[in-house]
Every structure is written in C-alpha cells, then in structure tokens.
Image (cartoon, rainbow, N blue to C red; front, side):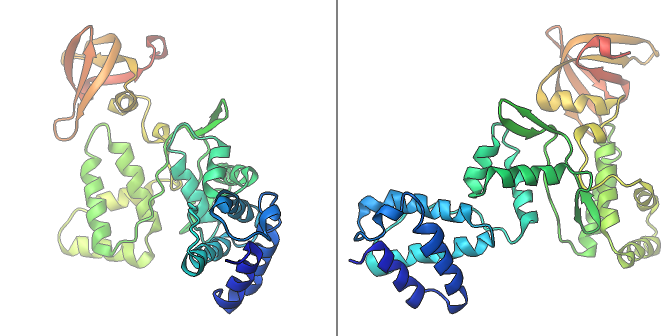
Length: 331
C-alpha cells in the first residue's frame, strides 16, 4: 500500500488526462494536501481510518477552488475511482451537482429555496461553495438588472429572511421548455382555454404572453398564417402580443387581482382563513367572515366552495367581489 501523497503522484501521472494534469496537481498537491485535516496524514500509508479526513479534505479543496468547480469535481471523482480500482480503497463522497456556469447554479438555488427551512449556510454546504457566493447569487436574482434568458428577464425581488432562513415569498419554478411549433400552438391554445376560468385568467394570460415574447418573428408569423388558413380565431394571439413586458417570473400577487375570484386562490392554496365579500343574484352584498376556502371547481362551472360557520357554501366564482385576510381590509 502506498502513502496518500504517492497515490496522488501515481494518479496524476498514470490516470489523469494530460489536459487536466496541471489543474489536478494544483488541486491535489495544493488545496487538498494542504488542508489542515489532510496534511498530517499525507505521508502515511492508506488506511480506512483516513477516510473521514480524505472526504473532508476533498470537500474543502473544491469549496476553496475559485476557478472551474466542475473541472475540480470531475478530477476528484476520477481520483476517488482510481483509489478504489488500484488500491481497493473506498471513499464515500456525495459530490455536489456540477454547473457549467453561474446561471445554472442560480437556477438550482431557486429550486432549493422551495424548501422553506434553508439557511444560506445550508445551501453553501450542499453545493460546496462559500456563503459569500450564495449571497451574491441571491443578490443577482433580486437585482433590477435581472438575469436575461432569450431576451427576457428573470428577476425574483421578494426575498424574506427570518431567523437565518431565506425564502422567496412566491415560489419560483424556472421552466425553460424547448418546443416545436406545433407544441407551442397546443400549449398556447390550452392557456386560451384556461383564460376563460375566472380565477386562472391572469395566470394563463401572463404565461401565454411570456411564451409569445420568446418566439421568433418567423414563429409568430407562421402561427397567425396557419390559424387564419384553418379559420381559427387568432384574437388570443393578438391579445398576448399586446401584454406589456412582465419578465419571465410573476409572483402570485402579480398574477392575481385585488377583486373577484382571483383573490381567493391564495387562501385556498395556503389554507388561510379569510373574509369574503359576495354578491347574490339579486345584487345584494354580504360579508362572510372567518371563512376557509376548501375547493375550487374551474371552468366551465367555476364554483368556489367555502366553509363558513361549520357549513359548506357553494358560490359561482362571479359572485365573489373580493377576499381578504381580515374584513377591515375589504374597504
């Protein structure tokens, strides 16, 4: 059995691709062997008692490497494989995801923040990056400059911190679909149908507008031409083109509205109690306090079911004037 330092020399000379040898030498002989937990054991023969120190040293070496982390992770993956194949020495390392650029890492952080109990330190720990890098990524996501994707901006401004936990007030799902033109039409026509729903109208309209803005001039022209040739109504596409710039992400607040059925979906999603102002068929209004929205049946029925004073009440969505957490906020 060789010493840890000798295994590194052997790996670089015999198992590491020539194009990576310089970087491997910098990582393994510099960052890795100089780690405080690894330095004392570098001249000792490989032994399973060294496993924990090696695992920790690999993680710290990648975290401290400020250049291409994907290359660093790749080199250490190869090194771990080499140790197992040549020496039968197993190191269990749970490597982080590999990102080609900061954009990919930021999109991954957006998905991580769906978990409402993560701290910046937790994200840094999972991705093997510094807390400063995480803070910079979140700042970039919140920046008015936004992140440009296909000439559209993605900006997530509403970030909250509580007791060290960081979260977006409105959950972001970064979906960037690659579709053929027929799939685009199917998706847009589906959104047109959903836009007939009282509660989902704004959601469908804004999503459709985001998709429309990403299309090429050729694509929008072809969609309109073929729709006309088939005798289809193209007013939906005209309406999408007329929607003002909103960016790639819209919060629940931006999608919903102050009045009507839009205002109840947030209470349904979060099971929060609310006060609901409704209008009956005779045009009279009444206030239902201490309600809980328990069900929404979409288009074509568009029925809202709420629990009020122990009873279920079914209302057409068009009967809802507005809903608020407290009745005094209905003015």
